[in-house]
Image (cartoon, each protein chain N blue to C red):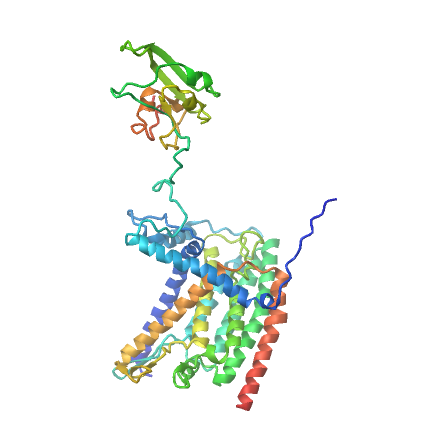
Length: 182
Length: 360
């Protein structure tokens, strides 16, 4: 039988009469109180980099994410606004969740072989592994939109089409399909 | 005492009671915000009226509305009369204890003299402690009349704790009574207007420091708040008001805050000079360098009431700070602290005070 011997800290006289320890505790809590009070006041009059609390008040205040955090996908564009994607199917192939659906078509420019006719990602299936970003030879797909609040009323609503993927700012919180309004 | 001064006293007393009740409501906000600030949080601030948040002050209103509109549950087997009486008893005795607190000097307007105190009793101190003791009945009745085992045990814990610590609270004050030679609270405050060596105010804390710590510890135990909140122990060990809901629970809750204010008032009155402001005499401020700032009598009274209010506010803050700093005592630790440490110390304090008074 493994037993854990709990060594109790032997209290010395000053600790046994409580008072010095109580004052020490009060000093710590009061220090935090007055420091935070000062920071709140200074923040109210314009020193925005001072925080009196560690809280981020979520809907109004978004917690900053790391630059490398994998968030909602986006498709990058060429100068003329068409997608950089050449429909090589690398991402669709590497995707472990099989959530990318690409339909290819001819590109009008003969220098470019193909382009996607449609490029859908089912975010309800996506596992945010980032393999698609690493597999892409054209830097056409990235996961750097910093959008995390992806929600929909149905499974179909999680299906993001090419327009939504190319313009994440336009479809920031948009629910693409609302089943209650067919 | 003529009619006008009686009316004036009633008005002043009404204002004082309204102030106490508002402060009790405000303390719920202070409790949330102060604990939040101590723990680097923000605290409740989501209640909003017309887009206005006011640092969460509307939560007081929201709480009141919630309490008043909640179902007032009465257990089937509860003693209906006692069950409904218990919270009223609790609040009533906590409230009328305030009437003996002197919150200011005598206000003189023309030839009308208005004493800023509800009851100028010769035994004011005993009266307050008697009201505090009677408040225990609310707790016992609340636990007993619910016909719930948990409430009953909570009530038992509460009554044994409160009775144990009342002995200490009474004994710790005796030294002070010996020094001032009176039980009249106003006389005590007058006595604290004297100065040691011409500059140090002869406040109760200066002459009876040990009694102050004993009194404060026992008084925090009387308020049934952390670190002595075993009667309530909302989340873990269920307390005497388990079966109560709605405003009846709210009244027990209010009693805690009222008692906190009462303890703050008592600590200020007994140990920190009551309405006495250092350097303020009947004709105005006298400074140590010999300078003086002469004031009319009503301004002096105003400063004294303000001084008293600031002292009470400080002690409310201090009691909250203690409440959010210390962990809860275990029950055997609580009893050991009360009976084997605080009580003998308070007796020793009486002896030492008597010896000093006899010899010097």
